[in-house]
Length: 514
Image (cartoon, rainbow, N blue to C red):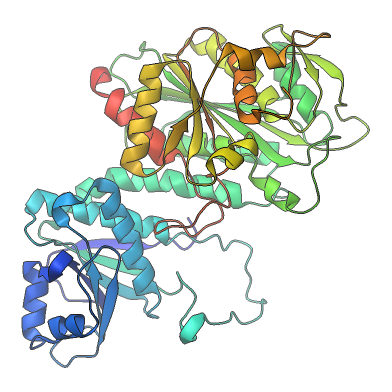
């Protein structure tokens, strides 16, 4: 994570930083600490709130400047909604919102009081840890290629500094800082995985090709993940003709990366398998994409980036589960060696594929990697993630990922995890009528089903390489890159899917493996 934010947990009695935020519930209910501040200010906080019509509703704020009885030069009163109704994700979003408000105030350090009216110690501990996670996610910036030679950055509206500038240290004041610090450790592991995924997706394609991506995966060894990289010779030996066909137009060789985390008590427990599409740049091949917006295709590896970030999160928090992540990394280019529309390739499964559209390439990559995952690991379940189709954005916009599943239990787990984390999914149909659209006269199947139901036929194509293992496919084209900005993400790359899958694993697959 660029310019990583330092987060400190301190007791309520700790000296306050130059800028600070205190929380208030709806109808201006104040926690004990905030009430004490108001008393010290001679009631200035409450008078300012009343004058501004502030009611404590979620993610609203007012500011009090330079009161003589308060050490901070700026005090923000931040609405927290109804504390009794707050869920985990609400508190994470609140932390991101608070950081964003503080970051506008041109200060290098700030305080946040993680105390809500009527909340007990454990609740405030979780609040502190969740807010810290939200602030950490909001603080992310991809500034790797910004130099001191660039022109002076313009200020924001009303002369304010651009959002995210300045704050380097955030002190979270809470009644039990040791407990909050311990609770934050697992959240920090997840945030680290999200930052890793965002960094990968934000990288330009000239700096991050298949080989460079694979090398970045080797960093996971630092948290205990076993990483294996399969080169072109190995992929040819395995018969991955579908994946190799996509890559053959590029001078950059393809790679498949296998990442294993064995955290279950029984090392023989079947692993959960997560598969990611890693197209580091997608021109569309000879079925070339329009020039406008093609630069965004550096993010066509966001599914693979999510798998890498997830493996980091599981290992860094020592998740008691066995998991394997596999990603197929290719570059889809146009050249004299590139795949042509009408070519027929043989996948690792032995099934032949007529390639009618070279821009429907991600499913070819997934076909071989999913087959390999089943052959080698015999997993308990399969979940794949891919920025697969524009059609899913036509259906769902940028608010949900498309979920396709052969197993109702797995689908329900993902839907519940999506509701809990805010990374929402919407289940789409799988039906034999759609599958028939992939039948070909010249090969076992074709790689597109026609203009209609594009995301559904794409899912059915992948499903032809699943051998009875419970399987879910997540089409993340609308949520993984250039997605809707929110309180915990202001980046072009969202890191979507890591919180979703980590929560799904934690809620459903860890207890029986301890």
